[in-house]
Image 1 (tube, rainbow over the protein chains, first blue to last red):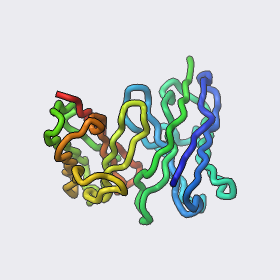
Image 2: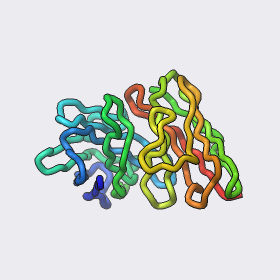
Image 3: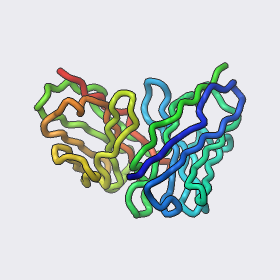
Image 4: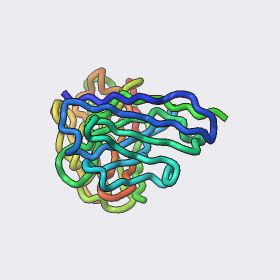
Length: 121
Length: 107
């Protein structure tokens, strides 16, 4: 069974930094692109970033480009999201998600349970 | 950026009835579209990918159709666990984008 477990969320001041982790099990981690998707309180889903399985390629949403860095350690089956210069609008539950299927395209299956990041002003 | 628009925002349906949800893309996404269901307090779960392929373990009452810019998710007979929020997501182009969601509530 595929399992994704996020950690590292918490309360941080505006302008601060935080690193999220996502530990994966139940599949060959290095073979799959992994992503972060967030959801602000009471709002919809927003894709944040994706990294290819071999870590060679990354994609970022414009609101986080230059502030967030996605990375992975395939020896530890772990995905990371380093967040800097945090803003109030970054407050959200952050989900880790495995790429579904085996094609080039990225949909999300499954998702972790999420970790809450709260940026205080 | 491809903008995804879902309608209606809220759909009131009685248990056992059919629900039809719409998703429109601002530019063609071919068949590169997924649907997710999110129950309160839970992470989203994949229902449909490639516009019409049910994900593993998803019951046959869920069906997806469409291509290009117009897509539909149909739930043939609503069960209690189906009262939730549904999102569409395009993966034809970067950035990946979601629709704003349709909340299916009990009538």
